[in-house]
Length: 76
Ligand SMILES: [Zn+2]
Image (cartoon, rainbow, N blue to C red):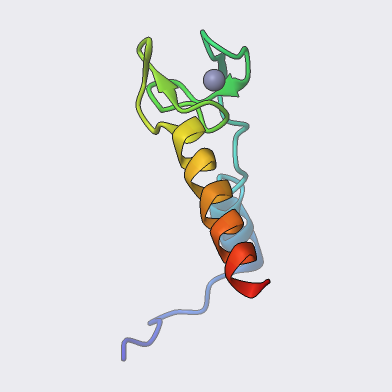
């Protein structure tokens, strides 16, 4: 393992760390649901990107509820 050749001063450590702060993500608005979304990414709220349903979240939800209903029927 490499060892530091010289001790790093408090000042040089702090000067380096001055750039570590995270910047707030820039957000745009979803065309369909007006939810804030990161640019060039699929909307996590409704699954839309560039005017089409990419994730098909609605059908996924429908499938989940169907599965739940089936499980409930079996347990009865
Ligand atoms: Zn959306």
